[in-house]
Length: 451
Image (cartoon, one colour):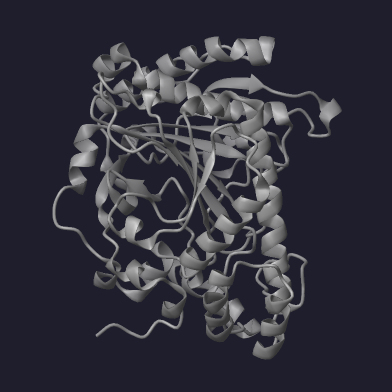
């Protein structure tokens, strides 16, 4: 028998019928000969940790912007989410975790790289060379700047974008009987069906209506639980974009920057309503909750969508304080229990960009007339947008990483694709960054890595 979940009332009834694939899409890790070692595990800076896995560096901004000289690195992931994936990460010595912590030019270079990844995998020659036909693409960004105690959706506090591509063989794992959340244990459900998933989508949809996206042709979609269950759209608030090309526009970078600012303001207002405090709590502490009647009164004072109020009231009834002795035990305990009981610090959210359907020579993903930007706030779930996403018509798919090891031949094939993309991207970004595009390295061997 399933244990009662105090957060069950926060989720739409349809969420419990939603098809999920939380255990099926398994992605191997790197060959054992290319495992992490030395400064890759203990390095004080991102560049030290990415030592053997950096393909190229992009110098994006000088110190005159107040950002200390932003620098992006295109990185071969140590634990991939797909056979063909990369990460583009800001790699300054100081943390720059959000879209507002980097210069606008840095954000433009990041989103333009995402656009070029879409264009690259859509090229018929690239599809043939690397067996990409019938695959699927996602771009994912996680932001969680203030959770520095428990496991987070943004463990490394750098502004970064995941470039993800699953081939047809990987997607074949999703075929078969659908699971539902009720077939999984309560801890798994809370991590992969976050309690604020439903109310968070409604709050962000309202925010998007007020935001004025500023991107020509962008449309805010109303919440539709039935469409999510049917696999026609992902969970979360949705902005429909007219085409991938908008990622190359300055207006898109500005949209993401303004969206982060509004999400931060919304999260701070909700935290203050529930706790009476707006400051970020120190690590291994959480602000004590106010009395329920005080929370209700504070929520009344906020301009929130009417449809969100019942779930927020349910949240006020379900949340409990964690006394200092409990927090101390969680700090020493296992990650699953910590993630089950200890909330993330706001704002915490995942962004995903994708187009429905498979990538085919006659209908490449770059030609899609509809592109979705999904925004999913998080309260408990430490799984970000690269590890939990809508994929191939299944609304919620968990990527199970480190399932065995890729062979050295498979990893070299991955490296060949990554280098080809890095060269393509460098050529396309020169008009934006000029001499800031550094040389593209080669994958030498499993001892030296990229050099």
